[in-house]
Image 1 (cartoon, rainbow, N blue to C red):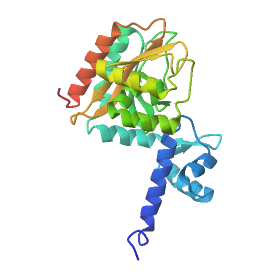
Image 2 (image 1 turned 90 degrees about the horizontal axis):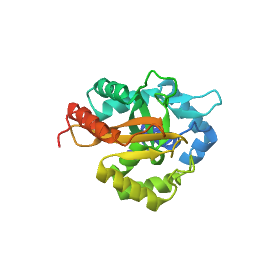
Image 3 (image 1 turned 135 degrees about the vertical axis):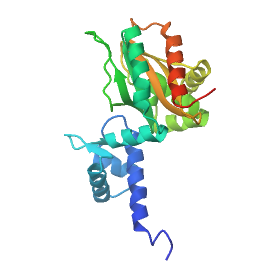
Image 4 (image 1 turned 180 degrees about the horizontal axis):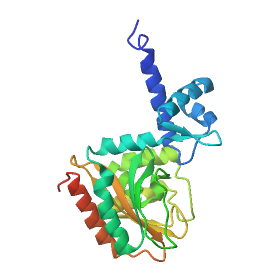
Length: 253
């Protein structure tokens, strides 16, 4: 008997991991049928494993019976990127930026093919961009997502484009591989990226990356504002803030 045949519990872990990977590829909740097709698992097997993942808070089920990644993964993801509490380090800097710009500041991490909003600092004004903690957005429609793709390299960008087909969310969304390669490369070179109404019309963002003590990308920091209020002079403030947070995470140039 082989090791694989003698360890059915490992097979269950492999199947659970495949389901989590499939969920991470979708920005919106996914049906059981889609997940079963994505992973090649029988519907009853898929349902049974998802039920266990829900019990352990790795997956959530909405009122429509569709599935999405659970908040417990957010907690584990933050610990994975740094043993230090990323939120507690970043939040004072985020609040300072919020007060200076009068706009929303977001902290995001990468989970598969999406960014997940981990923390936010919002201004006390009637009209501002509101991102929900725990919500997700595809990498290619966000400023920090393009930086994360660029940092991963051209082959990773090609793989992402192949998996996702670069769906359009607005008329400004990047939907071709050559343009995505160009914008991601330029973003990494200059150290910041823009979202020019690519995820949502009338919303513009400026994003920078945060790095940990190993030099790896730990998270993203961005300012989101109505496009007519976004100012390019904020870029240097964002770069400086990113460097301050990264230094507190142990990163040194």
